[in-house]
Amino acid sequence: MELVSQNRCFGGTQSVYRHRSEICDGEMTLGLFLPPQAANGPVPLLWYLSGLTCTHENAMIKAGLQRHAAEHGLAVVFPDTSPRGEGVADDQAYDLGQGAGFYVNATQRPWARHFRMYDYIVTELPTLLMEEQPLNGQHGITGHSMGGHGALTIAFRNPELFRSVSAFAPIVNPTRSDWGRKQFSAYLGDDEAHWVDYDACLLLAERGWAGDILIDQGATDQFLDLLRPEAMANLMAERRQAGVMRMQAGYDHSYYFVASFGEDHVRWHAERLKAA
Ligand SMILES: N[C@@H](CCC(=O)N[C@@H](CSC=O)C(=O)NCC(=O)O)C(=O)O
Image (cartoon, rainbow, N blue to C red; front, side, top):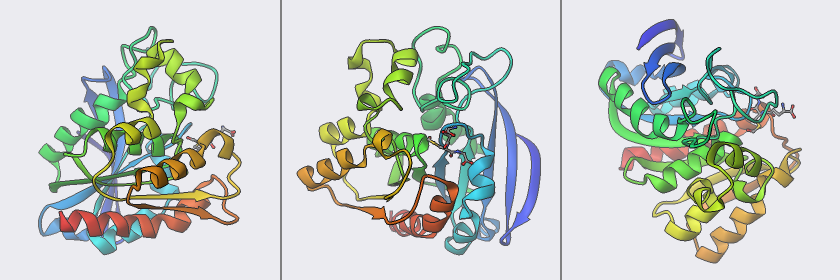
C-alpha cells in the first residue's frame, strides 16, 4: 500500500493509503487508524463500512471513533464505498454506482468488472492489511446505513472472520426497500434468488448469528421507511437472537447520530474481540 497521508491522532496514527485492487480492477483508497498500543504489538481491527455518497473520508473525519479506539487499543479501517475513476461505470443518481457499491459482487454489465466490494472487504483487504500492518487477526465489523447493511451481511456470512458485529441505522431488509431493490436489480439482475445473500434479515433468518448484535437507530431518522428497523427487531425477537436494538429518541441519520453512539460501539467490539 502506498502511504498518502499520516497524522498523529490520540497518541496513535491516522493514515490514508492507496493500493491497486485486483478484485476491483483499479486503485482503491482507505483510511487506517492505529492506536498507541500498536507500537507494542499487534492489535484487533474494527472495520467501519460507510454509507451512500461516502468515500473513505466521511467517517474518518466525522464519526470521532479514533478517541475510543485509542482508549481500547483497536485499529479501525475505513474502506471506500465503491471503486472509482474515469473508466469505472457510474450513474447520475447518488444511490447507484460510484459511492454506492452496496458491498455486493456485481454480476451485471456495466458493473461486474469493477463493483466487487463484497470480495474486496472479505478477502482482498483483510489479506493486505494483515500482511502490512500490526494486526492480530481479530476482526469486528460495523457500519452506517448502506455500510450497516454491509456490516451485518458480511458478518452473518463470515462468522469465522468477523467475531463481533454492530451497526448504525443499517438498511436491514434491502430486498424490501427502494434502498436495495433498485441497486440489486442493477448489480445482480432481476432474479431475486440472487439477492438473498445480501439481505441481513433473510440471512439472519436462515443462518442465525452465534454472538450478539448491537444496533442503534435514530427514532426520527428521515430514512426510516427505507431502513426498515422493524423487520430486524421483529426477527430478532422471533428468533430469540441475542442482541440490543436501541431506538434513540430525537436522533436523525447524520454523523451527529453516529458520533453520539460511537463510544458504545467501539467498547462493544473491544470487549468481544479481546475475549475471542
Ligand atoms: N444524498 C442523499 C442521501 C445521502 C446520505 O444521507 N448519505 C449518508 C448515508 S445514507 C445511507 O447509506 C451519509 O453517510 N452521508 C455522508 C455524510 O458525511 O453525512 C440525500 O441528501 O438525500
